[in-house]
Image 1 (cartoon, helix red, strand yellow):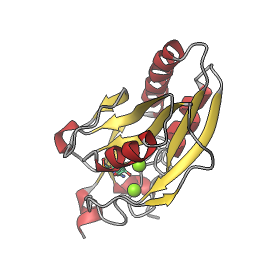
Image 2 (cartoon, protein in one colour):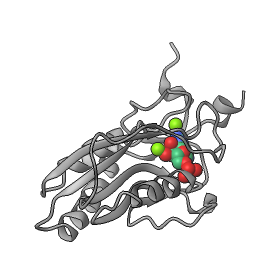
Image 3 (tube, protein in one colour):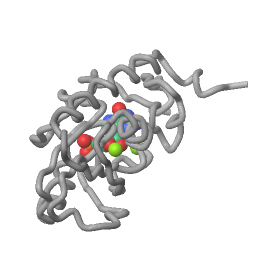
Length: 182
Ligand code: 5GP
Ligand code: MG
Ligand code: MG
């Protein structure tokens, strides 16, 4: 029987490496937000797994909220158009917001969302992304907390999908190009 693993060219980060990486990010956040409360905005659906692991390594109070924005759809390259599919449940006015993303690629999604969120007058706003693909950046976005800078390959697992699949892989892998070029 064909498994998800058969579509993976190689494993880029193992479960253990991701765990360590998430803890390092949380250590920085714990220091920076000591005595404060965080309003953590997860960008659905890709950031879900990272979000769940990260917030459990944070030791200051964290309020949960989520947003969904259209990005790649079924293909593997950005359309450049960003649409909010699900907005926040509550106001972020006066809150210390951290936006939590799976990966920053062209930067179009985050720079758009950031503009929208900034117009709502949070006390502060920072960006946190597990992965960063600097080679592919089209607009300037400052990511305050980054796990790894990654090569320009199509990655799946640990929340990242291709055509809604592979999100539940516990590691991050490089998808075989033949899977998305056929
Ligand atoms: P951006 O707007 O920065 O180009 O795109 C951000 C979104 O594109 C990410 O949140 C993610 O959903 C998707 N994306 C970018 N690169 C990859 C990748 O290598 N693998 C997967 N699965 N999604 C990606
Ligand atoms: Mg995303
Ligand atoms: Mg996707």
